[in-house]
Every structure is written in structure tokens, then in C-alpha cells.
Image 1 (tube, protein in one colour):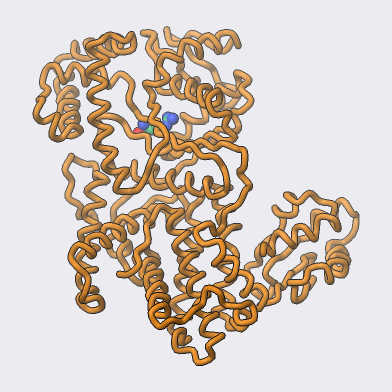
Image 2 (cartoon, helix red, strand yellow):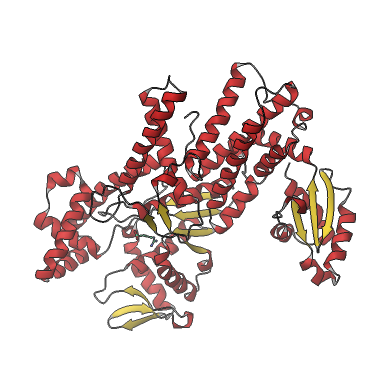
Length: 577
Ligand code: ARG
């Protein structure tokens, strides 16, 4: 049963406020003595011209009988504090969680609405480094969150597959390209010749002119340039795919920058028609002075398109294609200005969905104890980070297995280490609010006792192992009657149920501000309280069979909560470790 919703439904007729307004006001109090939910009456005070405390008293009197699951309502400081009957909360929540399974927290709030989540968007012919890991992991989680809330989600990878650098690559390839190397390590080879181009161009500036000419011919669709560009793109994508597969990330489309290039003339016409284009030293720009932004360049002086113009075209295309409710860009915060300019141009041109375009930024990635082997210069490749984490995890797993699971095969251990290692990386990216910089440290990332994926995964595996034992002993718990579930009365049991009960609202909150850390925090807390519980209470050895079944049902519910949370974050669980 959705207690929160029932409270909202109870308040609607009494306050005459719309359900959404009540939902926005209804809080989860910071301390338990203030109840499970709290409703502030200050907004109503204005419309009703009555003191908040008096309104709270009135409402509490009127509500009292109608909500059967409420133990009591207290009023204090202009708030209504709702205390849900503990046994009802625990039994209902455990029951609901078992019924929901991996659909826990699902809702229909997004029905009929399409959300575009653009993320990852690496640049072709460039290494896939840890910065791209952030957008890839964050975007994947957000797309899953939206999906879970019933939105139709489209996962878009806006590949950086266009621009003057491709003119440079074409020149470089024709002069110094090594076919065999390109086959074997495409990105390494493309990077090598790209770096060489820049070195050589210092001495031979004519190379730059050639590069510009090649790019112009590429834009004009000339066969030779297009063929080379296509090869660079295909080879790069193959490498990116490998990383995506390892992370379990998929996309619905890879319409990169190139895809929009032939839509620019229409954009230019549109902006001209709106009288927005101005000449600035030969380039065509839209001035954004009134928004205190630098002008947005739409066409360069040589008539070629630019990053921003392709983004403007992309928004218009996406709207025609998908009629999006939101168009979300998961891109590093350093590009915030770029997106403000693009959205401002659209707004100025009268595009009515400019405000539904949202830039979701994030911080930088740093390394505390940077001892990571790098294959290409300064950047840390995501693949190397993943592999090294998995290797380190495997060492730990091997040690643990020797103690706990002598029957585990090397293959099992590798499989588990891959999941935990990748999970540890994902968790590290998502555990703090996204605009904070990330400082990687092996110690923290793989701390089996800390705020880490291994800790949460280990707790999950522990819960599952209890359930396996119960199954082996033929103890049934999935059909535990309500009367038994109502026996779960300890503080830890209540705390676990409260966390499970907050799963859906937490997910909704996390989506509304695009902050997956909220869900990370929830499952970490579940794991913390569960570990405490498990150490204090006998579960399988509980003597009263009804209470034992109820405890097992709670363990099952907790495991569902953790697993569903992890899955939404993009982390696979392991049944033992
Ligand atoms: N390819 C760009 C980069 O790696 C990110 C693209 C962001 N998306 C966009 N629509 N501009 O920096």
C-alpha cells in the first residue's frame, strides 16, 4: 500500500489543494520523533487566513478516522506529523516488496511521455577515457530511472563524428597512415597520426589548408573523403562497443554530429527568417547580449558548420522525430556555456520546447593514488581502469573464496570479479552528487566495509545465502501471512521497512533532480541496517516459526530492494562472493 499516496488522497478534499501541490509539500521528517511523514501548513495559512497551528489542529481532527493505517497524528509548529502504525507499515511494505519484485518503485508517472537521454557521445578517433565513463555511467542510470517510472526513453549517443579534425585525419592518413596498425589498434593509430599532424603542421602550415579543404569536400559529400571518414567511424565504434558491452550499456541510436550536417541549411534559413543571423567578421552568428551570453556562431566564415549549429539542428530534428517531453544532455559541466547558448538561440527563435532541453552536468575525474598504467599519453583509458579494477577484485575474491567457498572454480571467480569490479567503478561515479569531482582511490573503491559496491554486493550475497539455506531446509517464507509479518516489531525491522517504503519516492526525487546518488544512498543504508540486523538477530535460528518466516520474508524484501537499486544504477548483483 502506498501510504504516502493515501495521505495525499486524504488531504486533497480537506485542503482543496491539487494532489501535486500536496505531494510537493509532504516531507519525510529528518527525525523519527517527528513522524513518518510531515505536512507543513504554512502555504495554507495564506489562503485560509488562519494560523498554521490552528489549521494543523483542524486537519488532524478531520483526518483522524479516515486513514486506518495511521497510529496517530501529532501537530507541532504548524506541521501535521503522521505516525504510521508500525506493524502495518512493516507488514504491508514487506508484502508489497515481495509482490513487486524487480518492479519495486515502478510507477506510471511517465506514461505517454518520451524522454531523450543523450549520453556518452565520445569523439571518433579519440581514446575513450575516464571522463567519458562519467557521462556513460550517469546517463545509463538516468535512462534506466526514467524507464522505471514509465517514461518512454530513447538513449542517444551523439557521436563526435564530424568537424575540421576529420580533414586533418584524412591528410594525416594519406601521408603517414599504417594500414596494419589501423586494423589492429584503430584508435591508437588514429591518435598517433593526429598527434603527428599537429607536430608537422607547426613547420608546414599548408597542412592546415589541406585539412580544411578535405573537410569542406567531406561536407560536400565527395566519395573519397566520405569513404575514409566512414572507415574511421566504423573502426572507432567497434572499439567503443567493447567498452559499452562490458558496462552493460546500450543505445537506441548513434546519430552523431555528422547526421545533422545536411540539416544546417534549413536551420540557417529558419534563423534568417526570424531575423536573428548577423554577420560577424564573415561568420554568421546569433547575438545573445540580452541574455548576457557571448554570440553563438552558426556558420564559420568559410561557410562550414560548427558544433553549435549541429546541436541546434539536432534539437529540431529530435522534436520532429520524438515529440520529446524532455531532451536531456548528460555532458560535463565545462560545456554548460555551450548548452546555454544553444538553448538561448532556440528560445529566441521562438522554439517552444527550449525550456524542456536540459543540460545535466558533472564534475571531473581525478586519481588520488594515481598508479594506473596508461597506454596513451596522459589520458586514462576507461578500459584500463576497468581491467585494473577487475584484476584487483579478483585477488580479493580468490583470498575470500579460499576461506569461504572452496568449491568456487577459477571461472566463477573471474565472472564474479568482473561484475564486482565493474560495479565498483560504476558505484564510485554515482555515489556523490554529480557536480562534485570524483577522486578515485583503490582503497575506497574496493573497501568491503565502506561505501562501496563490494560492500553492498556482499550484503546482498549474504542475504541471498540465508534464503538459500532456508530453501534447503524447506522453510517457506514467501507466502508468510500478514499476522506473522506483523510480528516484525524491532527498531531494525522497522528501519528496513521504512527504507524499502521510500524506494519509489526516492527514485522519483532522484529523477527530478537527475541525481542517482540518492538511490545509491538508499541501498547503502539498506545494506548498513541489514548488516546490523543480521548480527543482532538470529534469522534462521529464530525459535518461533511464524517470526522466523517473517524475518526471512524481510530478508527477501531487502535483497529485492538492493538488487533492484543496483540494477537501476547499472550494477549487476552476484549471488555469492
Ligand atoms: N563529443 C563531445 C565531447 O566528447 C560531447 C558531445 C555532447 N553532446 C552534444 N550534443 N553536444 O566532448
